[in-house]
Amino acid sequence: MKIYAGSDHAGLALKQSLIKYLTQKGHEVTDLGTHVTDSCDYPDYAHAVAAKVLSDPDSKGILTCGSGIGISIAANRHPGIRAALCHNSLEATLSRKHNNANILVLGGRIIGEVLAEDIADKFFSTDFEGGRHQNRIEKIEIK
Image 1 (cartoon, one colour):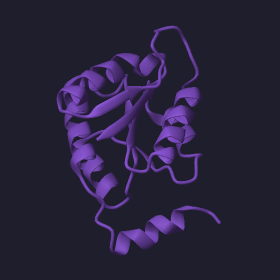
Image 2 (cartoon, one colour):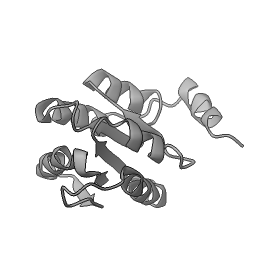
Image 3 (cartoon, helix red, strand yellow):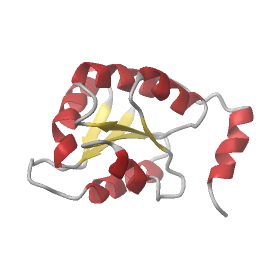
């Protein structure tokens, strides 16, 4: 699977760890930054990943910041993006099955590497169920 990754400084270490893990699992991961620990603005990376996911509908994204909250808010400003902040594998599974989430969001100061790997495994291996959930997805976008 093609995955676009982004983070601010507070999510950098977790993002780097996940890129290594996901690459070893056979995913093609493109890192859109940040690449340094200097303070930076999470919306820049949320917008970059959202734009790539929207331009490549078969892809998914992963975003990390300190809590995951700010970067998920920024990503979700893009019509067609459903960025899910997940704290466990059940949330990751349900975000894909029921919400067709296309970007996984994790808090670098909240989630450890082992848990993040489990969450990512579930997110990137779970398919959208469609059916009754499709109508709900269509109602998300304000027309």
